[in-house]
Image (cartoon, rainbow, N blue to C red; front, side, top):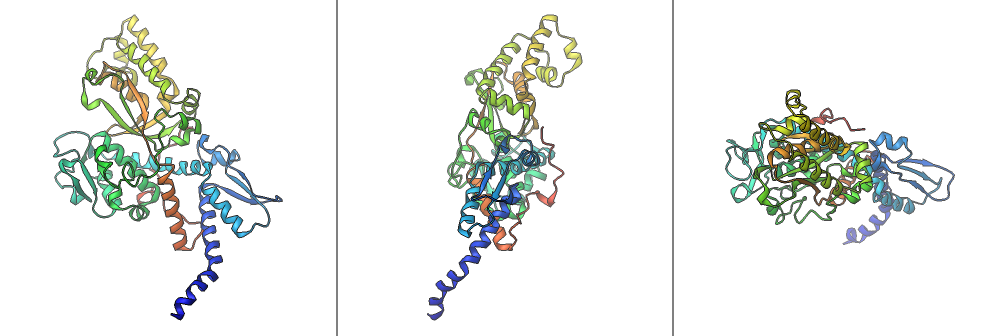
Length: 430
């Protein structure tokens, strides 16, 4: 009883050092994200968040004067703690995190693209096919019948390895889910990914099935979702706000206009957005303007007779010289008008990952779908996501827990991916 009575007193005595340690962890996390702190002759903290979401990378953001804090020579511990919490919630911190999120997305997408064993169609039993080895041998357990739902049955990172290195089949919707989960793996690092999420939070399957689970993407643990279908708010924030964001390309006309049901939509995650594309999206207030432009491209395509398979893909994406030479003068003029529309930075500089096509500009997919479903134009939509809300806060919490456990305020869990290999990252578009 005497020890129990002493416990509150001991905690109160230890509180200043505990609070200082946590404040140190918070400042260390902010510094690792790119915030710079300096002591100056000021009466109160001065925060210059800037516009990091509009920059190509962290180096450019810092060179532009973003992410700077001037601190007074003397700052009360409670005031410092309050300031650090405010900075963790600052919009500029979300953008600084988006640089890391973009790098993680590029590593994840590249790893999935590099696995030739991850296929789209073929003989499989159920919605997702794990091949002859089966799901259990590759780190997954079935939670829905007919292969409509699976979750990891052991280490989360080992389950994702089935898609990095194994022989697995799924349609593009699951491909998008896997890319989203793989991004979290790359962001947290394997050890962090294994401990930050429970198995049932990382389910994959039909989108409908995920809603009834604890999925961090669409289920009970998704938390606060951000809806911006036509990217009006995202475009206003800047290019880095698009990093890792999921979406889909879908037919504008009814189902009766489809010739190829397997290509009625394409699910994607955004891998990169170039500076010119970001400026174009901002000037046009998002994606709705490009839906109209897609319809213009489609209308022109209807006036050019197709020759053979993948006609427009070979003509407009591959620039097949023999095919171009076969055009009549009137056809060549129509194709030139299509090419001018497709030369918009949006089509060239918005890179998306779509299973099984890998990482390609969005213009490639708009052209490809002219061949697959020529009787309908296509539209682009962003889906609801929690990258900047729930998942951001969980990443923050994981970093702070790691710091508190290690006693190293400047340390973060590795976000360089499996084996610490950063070489898979694609160059960021300037």
